[in-house]
Image 1 (tube, rainbow, N blue to C red):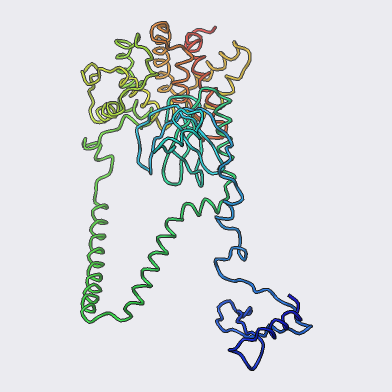
Image 2 (image 1 turned 90 degrees about the vertical axis):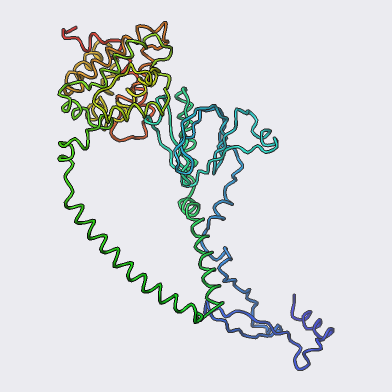
Length: 476
């Protein structure tokens, strides 16, 4: 508005509350200090040399005066755009940090910029939402981690997603290029989320709780600046009690230190038989040294039981047994020296095979030692079959004695399983898929997890197919 029109309007409609001046006074915030509450008065009748300056809003809630925040970042991305969708096998193994029993199911997965949604085998998830009470399971990718895993499942091509809230999911597909495509799509979605967004989503609840606590303390402080007389006694009592409580804690700490310093060593407890050596989770050579053999007794017992009543069982070593019973067998093996697998509680042969696979999976160093992993991978890449077999044979001969003897007995047993393929439907390829990641894995997982898994399966399959040439005493 021009100055002439402003003055005309002011003259036509005078304000009765202001007779001395025709100007309207306004308060503006002092721009020199961020916390100064003083104000200045200026007339709306401006001179020719004065330019109108728009007031700067310095309130903390004005996002235009600050860096991008969590809301700004979200606004730059459209969370409703579907980046990828399709069928995968899914298993939820943890909910809020609490472990769950693994249960695979086929799910239609929809990936957007910030989350993933799982639908129950619906090709049209939008229609599934129309069903009353139906809500798809959702995974927030903010701060999530994604990695390949072979320890959480005997299936091939499995990767794990871990969220900030403690939820864990396994996703799997037998098609190599499909699962690799999904892995990279999800990883790219996670990497695109800014670091500030992940931090904000992780600490949002804590910040809200903290702010609420501060407001509560402030409200209590404003209600009563001075404690009431009856409250003073309780305050003094609490101070005295806290001092005595500190003294008690110091005495307890000193007693615990004396007790810990006097406690017997682990070796002494083992010699007295109070603590027995564990079979599961121990190094292979330590188990063999304790038993004074080159093959663990538990491995021999499991192989004997499977060959006695499991060679003709459909899906032997592929079908999982009852996890609770397998854990019970694991406990018995660690606590007792004598084990009878013919007992009725171990009648399910899948429990025996599950325990045997668990034994090899829990070895701190796999049956194929870490230092041999890359050498075996390079050997399986050799194109000429004769040279490939010769290279594998040479590496096997270099293994430590417990590893070599245990491997020879195990592969001889698996060869008998494969010989019954027409009955149990377990070929050398199927056994390679089951035992590859269990027996052979790198010390540090890398981005080539899927490629390594393929080589692991091929190594086990070749050693089963060419068992006599690899483990035989005579040269080919």
